[in-house]
Image 1 (cartoon, rainbow, N blue to C red):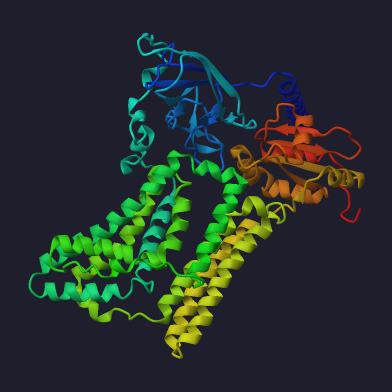
Image 2 (cartoon, rainbow, N blue to C red):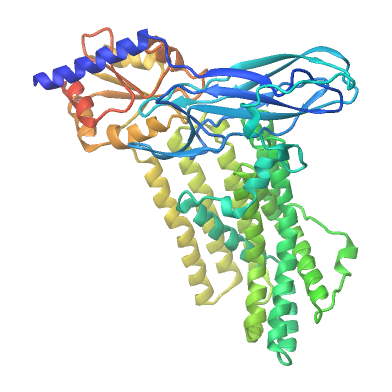
Length: 599
């Protein structure tokens, strides 16, 4: 072995030893109020100040990936202090050599928690307590998420006694609009100009939302309205084409207005930290049950019925007011068929940043309005519109499969206990395949003609083909990772083969990069096969994970990525911390004597 390689390995070992022995870098936290006392019926602001060590960062409140642990603060319930939604420091986009762009906070990060004090708050001392959650990383290593507690002791004094402002430098960046009905953070986020499309996934999400809106028009509750309105546009266009387009635009605005109203729950539910509730198994289970119930509704197990008075509303077709009301009515009439589907969309939207969730819900409205706008521009298309029939009911049932898929995806935390990662993705594909098969079977039942059957086959292939390709990509691993347990590791070591432990977690961005660029590189995969290494992936996403104890035994700080290699005949493993190059791991594995595969 070259002296240079030995020096590198020795240096890595020594650095890891020193890092383990030394105290881990920590975030310094403090909490303070903007006044030296509280008063009944008044407002106050609590600041949680995080001082982040140089060279490190914490994930911002809006991280680049939803799997990352975001900065979050929560005040414990208090008898007469009500916390409004916190005001978080804006994320900073930093470019990292390996991880690319991340939305993080560095240096000092201050979270403001606006407080409303009850009018009947009694005078005397009180204590405000809470928790702040964050995850700290550097360029190579991520530390386990932390949730330290904070406490502030403060007196409540009568309104007749003045209070003194304090810590003006800390509260200089607080936005008082946080006390308005719509929190400042969300008022800013709602501006679409501030919505950053970080990648093509957002663009695809908007295109999918438009498609969902268009599909809403094909539901049996809505489809009869389309030709009725198209005929109205056609009659008006014979006299004044420009007016026809204007009326069509107003009609479309009526539809979009309904969806704008329906997007309000996205903001409201985010205000009450709806998204955070998805970590609660009882709440998550209730949402899954609701989605499955709505899917059964799409399959025809039950029907949503509107009051009969809604169907007797008949706005005029030839006025702007009438068309706006007719657009609202068209959206409302769609609810018996689209309500389950829309509910699934709403649940998903509450897990996104507020601006994205609101924009996507409104985009569904744009998609639903789009055919009417096209018909007002080209009213001659009214003669070519399809008629309602069994196929429109089939589309509704296909949406039921989509809801089942969403429910299955949300159930992943429960399914992880009984299904492997690969089995989960194949289960999701099975739902898509069932939808494609259902489409083909129903098409053959509905129509004896060749063209509709071929069209159904084509759509089924478009559904199942990409889903199969994606599933194969997600389940194909160059390394045959074994499921970790202390007993399995010990049994593997007893065979005399090298054993590799790769500690990883969903919240560890560096771990995902290390696996993709190093562990799954051709040279490392070849070395693992050449030396007949037994590889274990140790998931420590949760602190109660089986591998957490071994991680803290090897690295008391609990920092990952961490690769531990047990060489034959050695009691203690060689360790590689943080992100390293494929060559470093290959050289380490080459220190093990190659053992035949049939050993």
